[in-house]
Length: 389
Ligand code: NAD
Ligand code: ZN
Ligand code: ZN
Picture 1 (cartoon, rainbow, N blue to C red):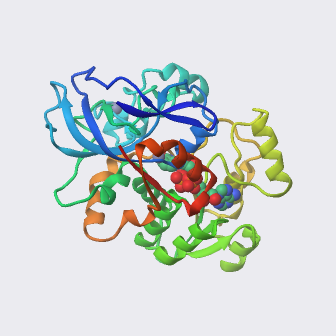
Picture 2: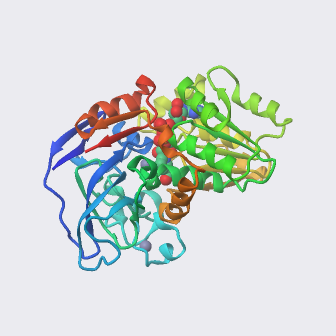
């Protein structure tokens, strides 16, 4: 079959590789009909995630048709259309019982690697390095789905791929980020990053009752989308001083909640921006926490800083004194996608979300290398790419 494989920094290729097979009785094989490239994939593409090996198959946002099931999968049958959540979770362990699916303790066979870096291991993730299991991803014609009896969501008849594909990751991610903000009537929420995750965080914050959502980025097309589709107040950080603007807009107090939907590759300006770039390039710091620093410093006293943006390792110059002395609450995590799939499917059906509006590019799987390039460099006003194998 054809699959999008990682070969190194800014080097992905569509290769011919062996078809996946059922290994465990709870596996299914899915023939992929739609798959997307995520901001998280860019961290692999740009070489910031360790434990990638040449030839690893990428992709954790995908859906398709079940073509084979193991003996213990009774909830799915051949021919079913499913969306697959990106964290691989057993459904039975302590964490799955607590609905903390992205930290399932049974799905990362390389837990020892993750324990060295993070103390404990999160769940396995499709196509996301050997640190989270070395599972083949779904930017491919076929994919093996472990624990297929608990993860995949069956797609109701009449719903298109584009309506439901993002239930695999970014719609639940934006929603969980907003839910963490404990939004009350009158709340002001500021969102750093207007990529796909930021767009869904903005929409979710309004749905959950925020009075004002302030969207921060520098790319005009993304700010425009935040304003046009969600009526967010758009701020371009290359044109305004964000810290000052947020104070002005909140009577000096700061937003009630701040969402960092940027993560480890934040674009930085000035001396601190240069400092982060150099340290990350020298591997003296794994992440560039520019947006995170700003979110922490800007949030009002006693507010929530919600961090869907992915961080990899050790962060420098994070103002933890501000967190402690001002009673901030930090909420973060890989999304517990399984928890949100069914309720968000209902919200798509009743019109609360129209996820397809963020798609700017539709391409064949064969064009994956080009798709990564334009999404990474934000060329051609690219916001979200969907690939069709
Ligand atoms: P993206 O690359 O499309 O969007 C990132 C946006 O941040 C870009 O529009 C960029 O211009 C903007 N940005 C960069 N520096 C900034 C700064 N200093 N201030 C404000 N904005 C800045 O990516 P995406 O797909 O939207 O993903 C966003 C983040 O969410 C990534 O880190 C990704 O890994 C993460 N993510 C997390 C989960 C999860 O489970 N927690 C799931 C999906 C994605
Ligand atoms: Zn993702
Ligand atoms: Zn589990």
